[in-house]
Length: 359
View 1 (cartoon, rainbow, N blue to C red):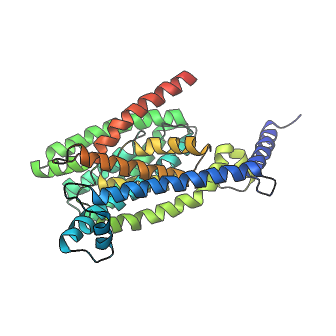
View 2: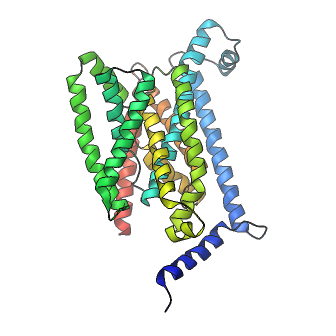
View 3: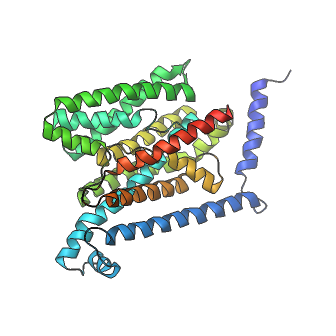
């Protein structure tokens, strides 16, 4: 009698060999790699074009030559103030946070094996917002303390969600999403209560920040975000291959010597860290983590964790949304989170209808 677990592991191992084989005869793998590279480069070029447009266009119009002179240290004081001090940090931060949010969404969607398993849906982003609000409005901490508070809030929320969603030591995708939505709703109520108990000025500032706002970005906040994100981006890059193997099957990953539980824990830490970083820097920005991984997979025709194109899509979407937000009403620019939520609502409905038709 054949052992079922052994036969399953053998079949998954053979399937994995077919997918991950690399060699001269592996033409499909090379074609997919070429397509991914072309699309990723194209997305970054499109992001660069929008970034240049955001540097030169606005209430104070700057030519490309003047912007270049300012960035190279040869501009006048007025142009330096507009381009270097105001617009450049905001543009670079939008590109960075778009990538971090998208990568976080890809990690959690891979872990839950569900396109709805993004941190803004299952409550981790709301938990990061709660931690940041506690530090900002109750403790009165600065930017570094707010980042730490957002990280602690996200990790604590993740632990609660995974504990409540676990059944026999395993948290299923759908169960995790349902529990996450419930916890997110309760934390949203707590966030409203914190805002109501704060002073009017502090509550208004926190509410504007809570809408997802890149206004007022400085080089110091950008530097803090770069340093913080570098750790989690490197962690996510090292976890990319083990997570792809786990998506094929846990027995296959174990057969190749992967420590599945350790990979899952590190992936959760990396995903929450990327989300908490973005939340602490610019407030909760929805939609990017939900949609960017799915858009990237459809563009490159790759299943699983595709971090490079996902990061490129996230950066493109956020810089585009921020550019639109600043120009809908130039006299009173909108927070970028309002634009991403408006677009994300339509995408979310389409995704729900698509999943419903499949079932």
